[in-house]
Image (cartoon, rainbow, N blue to C red; front, side, top):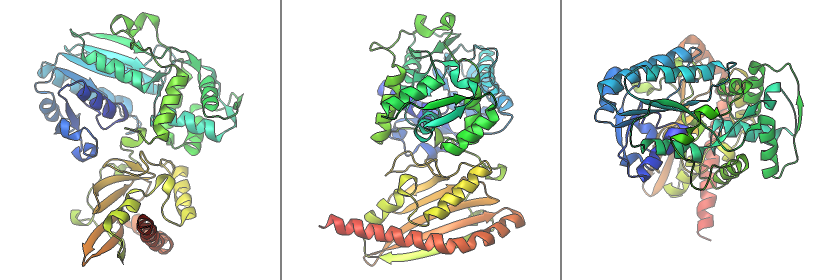
Length: 486
């Protein structure tokens, strides 16, 4: 399995294990999946999907290989990157005598397809150039809790009772529930013989994007949205607007929007039905898929999220690294408090930081920093959290990402906002003489003189943000502890 730390891959691994499959995953950083419920049930190979030696280790002795990789958030030349990765994977699969490659791509039957869909189609072509049979399943919009498409739909509908939209909202699309995507991928792993073919998968309904928004509004108890179509909103302008209104960043919104410009509908000649029969209880309708996604979201049962994949905000931030001990200049804002509250109560507040819970004070400053980040193309503050209470390595927390977590001892967040350097926010708990010492460190490794100037410019705001944050964490934990004894 490649892409095990992604939205589809993380769920598919769980389902394959439930089918009693023996699963091996190839990941760049093993820490990213250690928080998954299935991490101790899989064989983990740490490596890069572009490195032949790593691929050879990962594919040795494998029967079926799932290819769930994409690079749309990595660079503007993602098409070339994806082609090179697919070539390397196809070659390694041939060397390992793999029986079957299963690839999840995008429906690209319209000649007026976007760069993103063209790249997904070309990835399938490159994988199929080798001798190993490739079953390429092409899907359109995937509706599921935590998917980028669903988050875009949800926030646009909730926040805009009246909206001006481009003509693409009237284009036909055939959404599919993530439950049904996983069903087809699981069934593909159980085929009795290898298949070398391209097949489309989609739900039972063909609708417009505008119709989807109205369905969402009705299910959510909202009034019908007033949609005014205008001819002037280009994909670039549309994605900028989506990046401003929804948690989905502009860089991810653009390929999603471009994909909607063409009609994304299953080609009857390429239907999957002749190879894999639909689920016995039928495919979910658009309304059923939306209802299921909302239920999962409201019950905090979001297993994976679109933001699980790394989001590089600037070239010098693509690789995380430990600050001071890596030889970098590191500037630090250090705060410390001692409390009689047990560590478990303090940890509960620390682990719940961000998202709807907020940042323990100075909310307007955090909001302003997130707004500024959005204005320069960053992820901003609205990305939120996958789960309101619990974190795992790789989780996004607004414009941070969990780099390290040790229950009731340490949480380190890595900044994914646009910065002239690299930044971390770290909390540690130490029990000493029956009391708990709470340490809070904001660390910044500046990039050149500009980074150092940035640090000293924002330092005055630190005197408002960081002492308030630590005091309020201890205050909230004290209140929670007192309440537990009443």
